[in-house]
Amino acid sequence: MQNLLQIIQKYSNFIVFILLEIAAFLLIVQNSAYPKSTVLSTCNSLVAWHYELENTIVSYFQLKEDNEQLQQENVMLRNQLVLYANERERYKESENVYRYANLQHHFIPAKVIQMNMGGMKNYMTINKGERDGIKEDMGVIGPIGIVGKVCTVSQHFSIVIPVTTSLNFGVSCRLQKNSKLGTLSWDGNDDKHAQLTEVESSVDVQPGDIILTSGLSTTFPENLPVGVVEKAYVKNGDAMWTIDVRLYTDFSKLSYVQVIDNDIANKELEQLKSEME
Image (cartoon, rainbow, N blue to C red; front, top):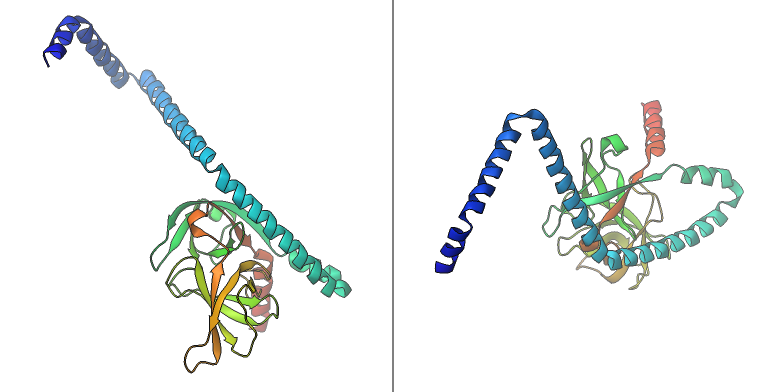
């Protein structure tokens, strides 16, 4: 303490000079518009530089996870190419119709900026909204599997409810090996699994079987990856399987998504409905 007082006493003139300079600077900034705007602009630039530097550092340490996601996405794309080849063979006699059907969907990239998981009413926020073409009930997919659907939209942001939510949200799916249909929903246990129901117990279901979307809704087109069967069991007195599905999407690592714009299909369906009325 004694040394501190000696230092202050030794440099007292310099300390007073610095304090007076700071006071003069603040008075100039407060009472003159141009210096004030210059200082604010400089501060904003410094804050922006800080955020950019922080984002660069965080992105650098996430490179490993990003590379893993890219590898997984490449696997998914290869699988989709195989499915496309198989489906095209089935529709070789009406190739033009099949090509048109696939052009009904395109994808809008978005970034997850906020995630609320771990409860029952889970949701996430993405950085795209109405001005980007996002609408309610559009499907959302991740790098290797489905994520959920858009429930609320503003000009610049959207709220997405995942398949792992207690809200009334079911996805029509099918078993890849035999095309048997079921409905995917969530039992509330964890965000890595969901349950496929409404599949007759006489259907052959084995661990490792792949689950895909069925395409029986305008939210998701057919053949999007969902997950794999982990186990299947029949509850007492039930004639249907309850199938635990390990989801492809890892919500704890989800950073980027794609929103499915099926505007062409929706417009055609609305037109058909209006004609029936």
